[in-house]
Length: 216
Image (cartoon, rainbow, N blue to C red; front, top):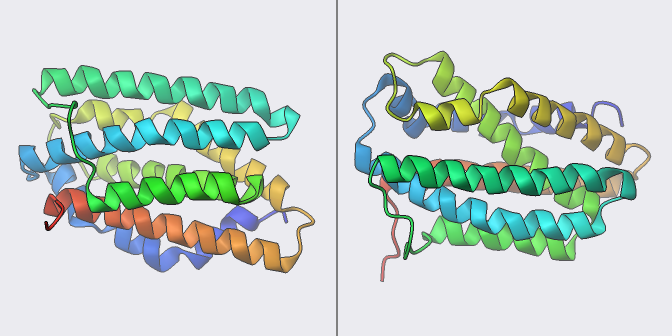
């Protein structure tokens, strides 16, 4: 299916609108976001990226031979991303050790790992595309609406640079190839996982904005 990625985005438009209008992104763009709120996001997203590495590793083990080099590079990119977090956390005095994952972060990570282990490669790849596409669109929304020079510019730049945009474009075109020839019931399963991932991404912004913690 040559336009499967577009079909997914069309299907998820309502969720996408909610994501791009989330107060976390708006506050980051206009400079009103409290430092502690953004630091809370740094801590939780650092944990998330750590757990994304085993998610990618499981997908690598299922990947067609022609896609394995790309997944090896994704693992390397995630390792560099963790270093970016550590560097910027140090400069902003953000503690990254002994941080408890929030309920949303914990649930999202479990969803990733469950999908990687229990679903097909194409289904897991759909989840990867959804997560990366949300981050590209979210941070581009921030970048395009910046009111002042942001103290968090390194994070904005990380997910809006040309290399990351090309990566997300590659994910979309590869997803189209993976969807080609699949029966409709499999495409619907991929669509369901795409929407679930997008909903978790919305919840991640909500978690950060509300500084979510475990109630007990």
